[in-house]
Image (cartoon, rainbow, N blue to C red; front, side, top):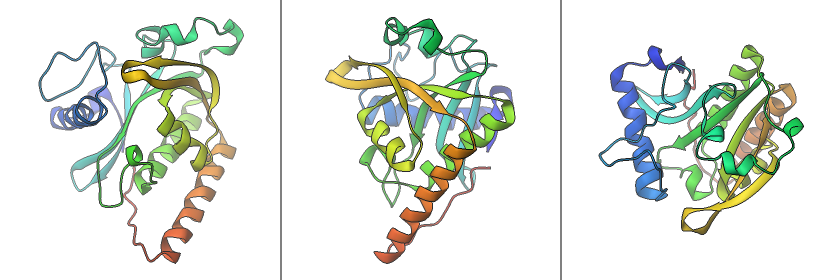
Length: 213
């Protein structure tokens, strides 16, 4: 499912914000400046410029990523702007680059991205991001990821071009970089997903895909 901010019902927005609070505040213990307590996590970037790609199980949102044009206010020119201070202007975003942030997968039977395992929803969201990007004429997604997500991206076949790195709260290392949005990246992810599916079958595991659109 893909929707802009106004296309989401109030109930769906609350589902997303509640899951983000559980993932980022409760489990990962991020120190999010905009978080002021309560059972939801949202910020100033959840507005009319934002698009959301979600995986669904029935009417429940089980994964999501937020996308925004890099020419609009973003985390990368807000809380994370310090990661870009040493980068040459030619390396930075342009008018066909978008920011991808707040990626999460809810805990499930097969494990989540945070546990270092592949979940079909992770592949589905990655592929949906590229499909959305190619339709919208996006060249790259700029992201800030932790070491675990960087590893998942690498294993998925989606190469992250790291431009800088730094340390955030809890001495966690993060990486700022660009993810290409093109047919080659799409095919790489499909190939990696197919290989993993073969591995799961050979190990006797059962995995059901959840539609992302």
